Length: 482
Ligand code: GLN
Figure (cartoon, rainbow, N blue to C red):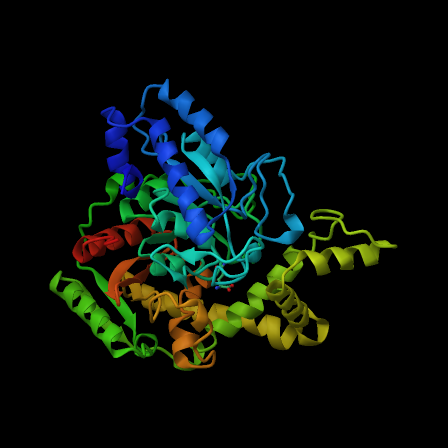
């Protein structure tokens, strides 16, 4: 324990009452990060000196009302940070020093939060395991025999271990909301377009969202307040006035109604886990929430994973074409430009993402475009239409974020990838990326001493409503238990 295991509000209070200094907080973060690095390999780069320097400066200043004042945090290494190594956990960028700062990290810096370093991800955010970062595997601080999940693996590990109370991730399919489940913390992906993606390395931009980890829901609301807003550097950022939701989150719900998608929920194969989630939904009913198990068109929802892979791999291969050693990335010598590019990309990328680029090129090729890429776009639209139809009748869709606890390393890929449990239960959170919907995972049940989260997805732009429902459920569940 220490200060950094607590909420932003609590740490802020202690700072204001001079029970702790910013320097002390940063020292605690560094000490814990060093230990976590040995045990779980969460970081690519530490920015210790800059962090201590900034802490010293802030300790001379008057403490403002801003909850991020002097708060140590961590950044997934796919955000460009000026003059700080930003590798995307890929060998091809292992010496890349950006000359600009991403908007998200810039806003946090201006809010006087203090970055202590950059965290490991699945290479260029493609993956869900934390196994494919160029600097090695990330382990789960709750049990280092297990993975923490990905792609935002290091950021999730850092918050789970209490190194920092806030960390930036990114979410294209579920990369914040799935690991949050395995770490027993909160992971929030706001509505697409509400937070600028300028400086976030693109994976699949029509799905990519700035997203983050906190220890509780109100901290996520506060982070949303700092980060949301229009940015003319990101042409997909919505021209919406900046919204402040934190002070409006009170957990009061007006005749709340939630939908549990039957054909997804019923694929949970472990009866004990299913019982625990049943119990959770019964508790929701006792709280006055209308919980309806509603039936969906299984044939349509069975296509989530394939649709996600076709769209995301296609976007990835075209968006990462600039990593060629000429525009970006380590240049590998070759006798001519083609050979140099081939050598750069062959040496620079790991196996997993090379496979995804090949798939993407295949889906985009002239002869396959109609039957694969365009078909996936249509399926995406059909799924989103159906989800929006449900969300017009309910406040949110609520489902387990995973059917089980974090897997052991030796059981990675244990599931039959064509089983309903895999196709539906382990991939349903991509729905929120298809529709750009706000979606949050909060800790919910425990099994064999490890957490599994519940995921709450609401209508586009109803970030406040989703956070408020999550806050009410968090109060009911009793919050983070680790
Ligand atoms: N697990 C998904 C994938 O493998 C999610 C990745 C993400 O959200 N960045 O692509």
